[in-house]
Image 1 (tube, helix red, strand yellow):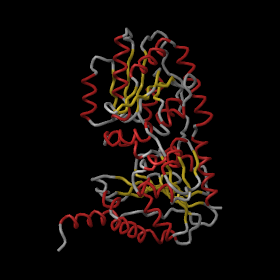
Image 2: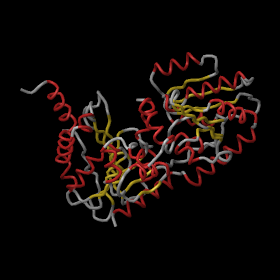
Image 3: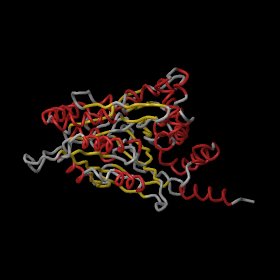
Image 4: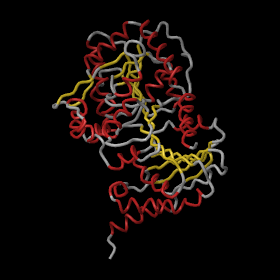
Amino acid sequence: MMNVNLLSKITDYVLLNVCSLHSSGLYTGKAGVSLALFEVSGLMKDDDFLRGLSACPDIEVCWIRLVHSRSKLIHRLERVGTHLEYMIPLPLSMEPILTESYWNNKYNSVVFHIIEHLFASKSNVILHTHTLNLIDLALYIRSKVDCKIITHLHCIPWKGLYNRNPEHFNRLYKLAYVHPSSETDLELVLTDWERRSYTLADRLICVTQCGADFVRKGVAGALPPTDIIPNGMDDFYEKRTVSRKKDKLIRLVYVGALSPGKGLPFILEALRGVKQRGYDNIQLQIAGSGHPRFVDSLASQYCDLDVRFWGLLPFDKLKEVYQNSDIGVIASLQEQASYVALEMSMFGLAVITTAVDGLDEMFTDGVTALKVGVTFSAEDGLKVDVKMLEDKLIELIEDKKKRHRLGYNARQMYLEKLTLEQMTERTVSIYRQLIR
């Protein structure tokens, strides 16, 4: 007799599979590229990348967004400009698909059964996966269809444990940075599907050199050709609209998720130290969302500071915040190719950032930003050096010329290395290499 839990699982899969990946807009000719972008919502700077690809008329794009939602149970198909866009509901529980081979294979076979006819008579098909746990679906499709797979590494999975499982994170951080070795490097790749994402794709794209180094050290055996393509975005820079010559207020801005791993508590603690050292002309604007309890706790704990919590802002409003700010502060404890860092550079802000991962690669200390160190101990884990952050803040508060010089240099760096056009050209070059 079928139990309730099993029936619930089957219902979950049926709800997803009856409305799964319809990509009828894939290129129907023989000369172009049929590109299916697979993503669990949130990793791509969606509009920018797709807008960049729209300049390539021989690449027909189907963007497949897989979304966890209790309200979106039916797929939605629409044409947006030059590409097709699908919103696909994921099962409310992904754990069986990721951990149980039976359900994984069953899920992939049902999805392929639904979309099999869409690949008929098509050539030059590329599956560009932006989420590592979609690798088994991509591999199943490749076993049935002549296509190529690109794995795009946006985040290093074990570093995301900082928010979810600090004890596990601390243990792995110690292996990676305190007692590194070729043996401990292998422990940093956490799952079989993560390993398959790196080893079984036809091409691997990393957004930073440190990401590529992580994969190279963490995987025993051969890897596909690997490319480093930093994130890029369109230029939205506009000069400040309101003169502030008589305004003595120094405006700082923090943008991003309000979570422990982004380091906002360390910024607030440093600002308190700056205020105690006699600087009271500082305002911090915070644009981003987080768990209400975490946000309320910060607002209550640091109510003595001039802090504005704006919540999640639409980009037009965020542009205004950037345009009217003096200093951008990033205190992330792990980051690959940060779009916030890119935006701050594009808008010509003087940036103070932690010297971690891709942020350390992106900026040159004293030239395009001021860098702050992090500390690690078995008792306290990984933390931002708050005293150093205090000192860097005061350095920029006191030196307007240095703020302008850092901001100018950061914008030049963006123009030279991090535009949407550059990212698109590099990515499309890989597409064309794969279909030769």
